[in-house]
Length: 125
Image (cartoon, rainbow, N blue to C red; front, side):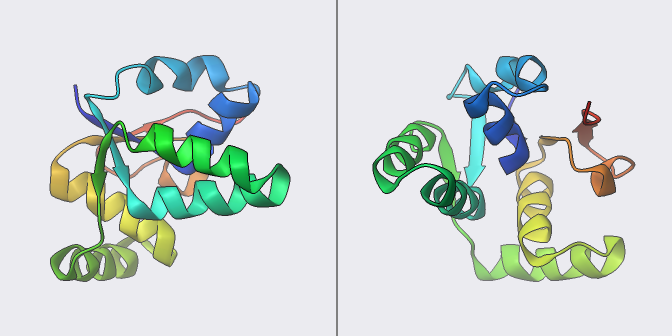
């Protein structure tokens, strides 16, 4: 089953936080994992801020083992439509649009995604 794990899931998993066990099964098979470049951006930014640039690049290298999807014009326009429909921020709209374009489920713990179609939501503990 191909899926996208949102940035929050990656961070939970990387930091072994309270939802790490929930996200872990989705971050073990990189052949089925899709990573939008916006998630790479968010991970790099967060890890550089919280840890260091070397670790950030190691994690980006890890994401590159998955199926990386870059932002295209058609994806940007779909994200714009979804952003307006569901009141999503830019990054959230890009990630959700990527899931819709690729016809995969988005695994996430951000509560504003809880009731969106094709989302597996884990509430924060």
